[in-house]
Image (tube, rainbow, N blue to C red):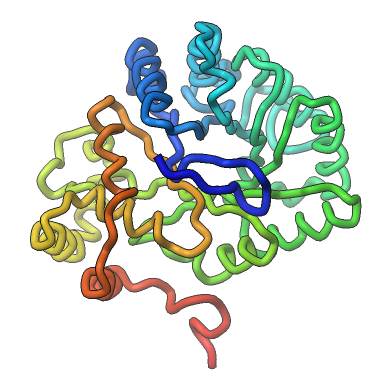
Amino acid sequence: MQYTRLGRTGLKVSRLCLGTMNFGPQTTEEDSFRIMDRALELGLNFFDTADVYGWKKGEGVTEQIIGRWFAQGGGRREKTIIATKVYGNMGDWPNQSRVSALHIREACEQSLRRLQTDHIDLYQMHHIDRDTPWDELWQAMDVLVKQGKVLYVGSSNFAGWHIAQACEAAKSRHFLGLVSEQSLYNLIDRTIELEVIPAAQSYGLGIIPWSPLKGGILGGALKKTTEGRRTSEFAQKNLEKYRPKLERYEALCEKIGEKPADVGLAWLVAQPGVTAPIIGPRTIEQLDGSLRALDMKLDEATRTELEEIFPGPGGPAPEAYAW
């Protein structure tokens, strides 16, 4: 396994992050345990989850599964960098969502209880909350850090200017602030190259891409239309929307003798600013297969052809659209 520092911190995380969103809804608890055990065997120490995963309001199904896995002992918790999130709707009352100081405090306590741990390594805001002042938010996070319940704070789905706002507000409080941004990023979805990645690099944030294979359609979807998430209506619509590009993409992968999923991950791992793409295996076999991406080096000709198939926005703003 390869490791890198998370942004400007001294924390070392694996170059792939284990996403747990399937744990509960699509993967049984027993299989989830096996996948997490195998991840540690492979040296993958970075796990991502969220309080809303499991999609039963207020229950935190996936966090509970991880908590029961931690409770088995054997160094599972000590070896794992656990990242979870706050923001989503966890109840029907007014303050059971978003990132007010009240909800941050209560959501953190509930996540700690479900995860059966005394601290969260990376506590991420799942979305920007335009209605909560930065002073309120950072004061709440500062308290959690001082209590030892949270070690690092990250963001998810922030715009570039939100990252700048957050970091400047934290700096004024002499607080470490954001250390990572979790964004939608893959060969198809490259909007973050305009401003999010430049902002993250400027402020020393690691980029943690979610949906690195676009919900599976970059994983050889044309030949696997009846498997996993590719069967969803959303995936099927994307499949038809991007079919001409996917045909070229899968032909390129076949030409170089590599699996489409591995090529998509290898391209992403090599992108500037990227710390660790989030992989969401439903099986141990899928997890094992993901490691190929870390050893793969795409040559210049392959990268050029990928850029032709999936052109990005043209680089960082404003040069991407102006002189």
